[in-house]
Image 1 (cartoon, helix red, strand yellow):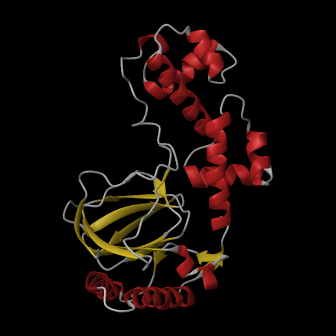
Image 2 (tube, helix red, strand yellow):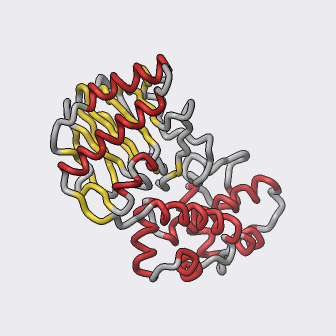
Image 3 (cartoon, helix red, strand yellow):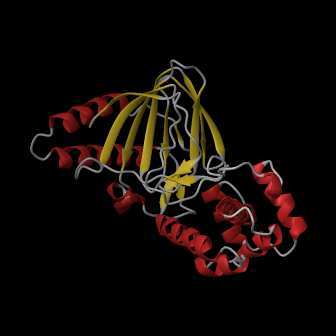
Length: 290
């Protein structure tokens, strides 16, 4: 599955959101904001930056800006504390650094901080936005000083360029190449390949095929009389054999047998859609600090 970009929106100027989820499950996604989670009770698997972490009650994890992640509660009664905050709050001291291990090793009083921030966001007293921002900065400074840190390999600047690259691919997918993509990012092919996989959860060629087949599905749905050979050419495939094979792999159907109104949206997850919510229906938002 392709990781999708989630655009987080705050209710005011505070640039911090807090909430508590029961039975947390979501799709593979990423966002520019940072995320701090703490298991209040139960157990959960978190897949972050290509690593799997299993958290139990009292344990916490930090998801840095741009890191691809998703999570699955092991127990439906699992309760998860979530704090989302703008990366700019930690940029002054963490712009080129990140935690060596997303799984936090010590107790930093995250549940207590959650309660404090939730109260501030609800009451909205004078300077509440400054209070919650300062509280988050203080906590994150403590975490970065106490946990092992390493140089960041994927910077927010790279994440912004990556978003622009995806728009470029969407516009020029018919003839876009790996070499052009690496050049667009100003990276060597080897480094670009690693970054693309880390950011999207798949290879560049897999992503390009998703984009092309998604457009092929739309073209077929718009006019069933268009010859399949023409669809293949217009969607960037040099041979009908390769097109048919890729189409079947991604949709489960041969092009000529595609059901009326079929949508690849459930399998193809495009980036940059501000309406995207990675949270699945089995997950319940129990409370928040709105």
